[in-house]
Length: 216
Image (cartoon, rainbow, N blue to C red; front, side):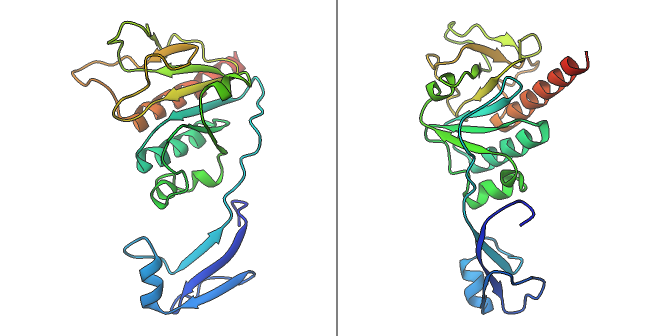
């Protein structure tokens, strides 16, 4: 309730007593409760909630977004939503066949952030461009010689922007509809960072840059 969720009903295990019952509450025997819970050691209470409505795609010039294009791993998605909240992003936009943000694994990986960060789902990046979002595509390298990425530490991250991250295995297509390309420069033999790690680095940099811009 503190997260503003619309809780429709709740189910409690027969030995669980730490709950209030202002809504429809159903008691289940231990065997039945454990069979429907998706964790090995469930706490003893399950709530059924309405999926929050993120609202319309309407932004101001001070907003910025994490945009995730066909990210497939629920753990990565949950971590990115958590990082978006920590960095103060306006919200997260899922594009194409990105994994379900409300799957149990995603919700747990977000550590509750998904209840506080708006999450939109759109079919294509053109939907964001149409509402004035400047899209910065991310890449770890320029193997095709077409993206010519700029270091994130030199890039302009002011205004209404979306930091676009791609699929774990394939990244972003070279011909995807972004306005410019950015990269995280790194040393060593690693070809790239995990998408959740890269997204966290980028989100924190955007947050710091905007804070410095406001103060300066």
